[in-house]
Image (cartoon, rainbow, N blue to C red; front, side, top):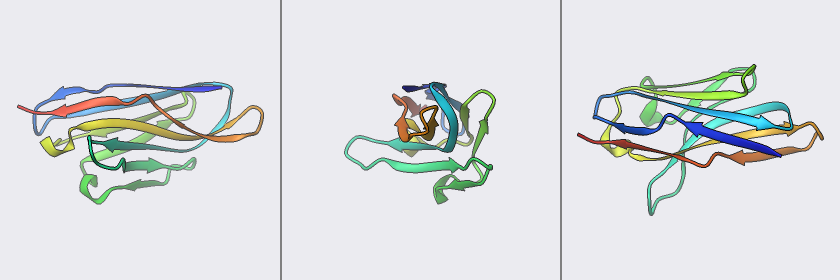
Length: 120
């Protein structure tokens, strides 16, 4: 069993910055892709950024240049540095990971979500 625990959300003014973290723990053999999604009520969850096991990154067009995804494999943690935040980016942010467990089974996991509110 694996758990993902997110942290770092909160209230920030427009133009401000936040750094989200998502730490995985449990029966982990390896972590493949890691990503961040966000969702607002009434809308579909959307991909914000993703990073592969070898560090290749992918971003939604709307966040390119302003957001940076990174990972610390030793800590089984993925980060999302968000700069120049906009009010329309208020959402619940979820981490998503494809994890190979010690049983060699490969599964997709989601974090519990962390609220990011961009408001003055």
